[in-house]
Length: 262
Image 1 (cartoon, rainbow, N blue to C red):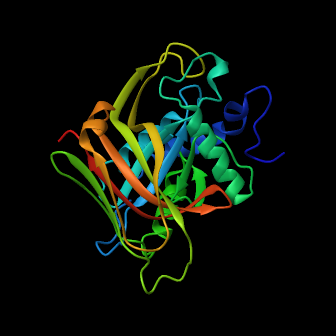
Image 2: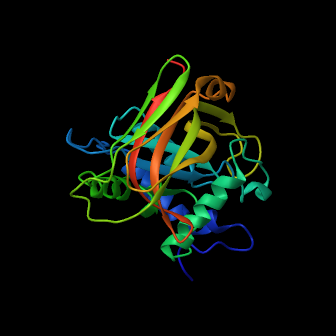
Image 3: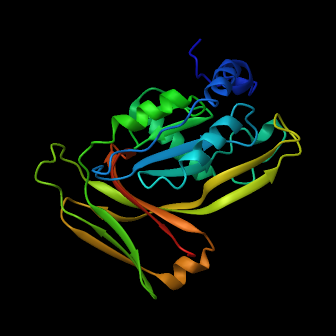
């Protein structure tokens, strides 16, 4: 049986992932070093697919929290809804997060959809509670050439500036510009399900993610009215340039993050 196959009973994470959690508990005692060299072209985007109904997820949720504030990493929590039937409806879950995670698996062609899963720069996935594997995956992309991307805010306008394809860029691709709005912290007292009785703090919890433009290789500027951005009530946003691979989300080639209520 494949390690990450989801079981009809919904016991995937409790049966198959508990050894991972035990190993991760030991690794959590080790120092975490995600910092990347100052010459890194663009922050590495780490997307954690997690669920309040997943007993293996709290260590990964804490690990993601340790990345927040590192200027070389954009860490995002994208809660999925497919474990809700186990007894507790995830308050952060969005069906579009579950769809995004499945689309990543279709793009890779490996059918690996599980929690806790971290997808790194849209390219590789790792078990989100495995500290060493996560750090190694991030390090793989620290020297990648990226497309320049900057997000700035003025009184009335949020401006996203994306550069042209660099001359030394070896990959030809077209991509989409996505914006993910998030709450900085969400604390939840879980009253039912496999994490019953736990209080879990989630970080950079995505509540809205959408495509706002297309990039064809030339410099591009996109403006959004701050009046509309503020109406959403989020604490920050992350913007990234992501390749389109047969209609699925592919590698991320540039990213930036901005706090909205500072």
